[in-house]
Image (cartoon, rainbow, N blue to C red; front, side):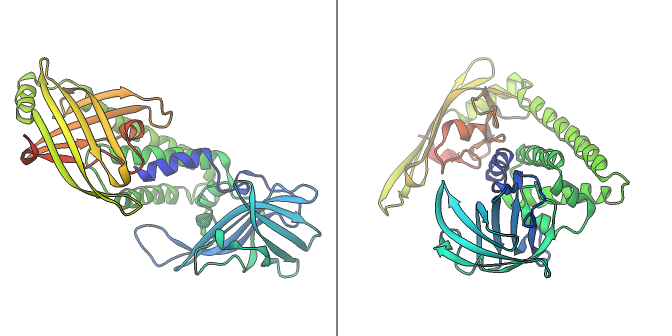
Amino acid sequence: MQLRECLALGLMLCWGAVACAQSGSSPWTGEWGTFKQTASTDVRQFEGHGLSISDCGEQHCAFSVLVENKIGHGNATGFLQVYSDTEAVAHLLSRKKEYCSLRLTLSPTQSSIAVGQDAGDCSYFETPGASFVQTYPLHSRESYVASDTAACFAADDRSLLAICTSKELSEQQSKWQLLFYEIADLGEQRSGLAEMTQEQAAQRNLLRSCNGAGQVADCLTAGFAQSTKELKARKAAWLEGVTEPGDPGKAAQAAAAIAGSYRRSFPNSDVQGTDFLSTDTLEITQLPNAAIHYSLELQFYNGHSCSLEGTATYRRAGSFVDQRQTDQPMFPLCVFEILPEEDGVKFADPTGACKMMSCGERGGYDGAQFSFKDRR
């Protein structure tokens, strides 16, 4: 769920102020730097350094900087104070506070910007092994609006470049990614890495199919729309399985098999280093009409917890399901699944909404379970 939560946030926030801005006529405007994809892996990773400068007025531009390498990374946003066509100072901010500034020298003949330290301590934005002090060659005069700036710098195909420079395509891509990860979470649980690998493979195939198109943007728009339609159909089929009533006879047998009081204690701790004992509890009571009443309390590191209580009804897919609306726009439907198993009870939160409405930051339901050995 963390991947999808990050993507949801990405729909509301652009990478720095620059990513949302449009290019201008200033000699400073553009994407400066270079990135390359690292040795082939299942998940794309990039190394390099880049400046994004845009939305330039008389003496100010929006500014952001990104550095990635094998041992460190850094990123910061702020504004560029322009003194001339060749000299400027970038002020790096966090929560409106300035931590450091960089001195920039633009070389028209080399089409590059040399960045040096000016004042303050930029280590606030950098991990050891990364530095903003670099020379950044001009890469593009057109501003990148996509959230994955490093991928845009390293792009070598028409489809990705079209997404990088089109706000409409970038938003369509982000919404498609959100839906893809949501569908990937339904049913069988996968690791975050497996989901990311699957999504990137699907996206690569879609982009490759449009590289040779006469109108790349139109091809991408149609491709994302068709894939979105297919993903929504899969979601509808899954929802049917968790909302369609199950066989009453099987429901009664399953409810009787898992009913009871469960309790387990385990060593826990917090960020202060205090050790203590925590206890998870579950109460399941069999009800008429193929339903159960449940009360669940789960404890996690640093005092975080999950707490949920309600009525779950047996569904065609073989689990007891408590489905309810939330007040979270990005996670509107909580579908809490209680899955009877041979040796106990397992829980699933496929949409992630149940966690959002009833868990602390470190808590979650996916993968949690009780053994019949925990039943009293």
